[in-house]
Length: 182
Image (cartoon, rainbow, N blue to C red; front, top):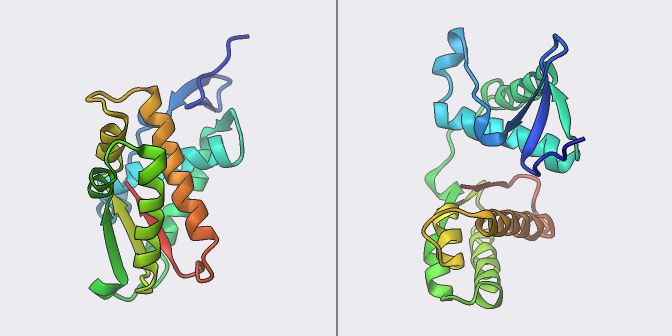
């Protein structure tokens, strides 16, 4: 038996065929009235989140197409069906990960993560509804010191996202906070 790559899920197509896909290979097409409700990039991110959920959170190696579609539909419905009041601009706070990496110099483990934690704590003091850390890819390449994405970059990206999740999880008011990292 051939071992699967760590970023691949085997999709059971329903007709007995099983096809391996990475998160980058998944494409989602929306039909009808749902198509104009979401930006293509938003759906791509939601699809990647569902992929991550099955692969990393549940530790699954395979999933049926219908099971994946149901999970994605559930995620997207959470954004459509829930009545949403317009968020005030001050309830959405952004932080630039590239800026934090620049301020940290080349000492990734030594300086970046404490700087990231301080930024997170400073932002949480303002009680945001959404905390958005942007520039993850550029930040990672800057910290690793490369121009092209490589496996070391992927590992550091996962480490940064997991670190932010852990930091948010240990905060007392985490129920009404959304963390976005891209």
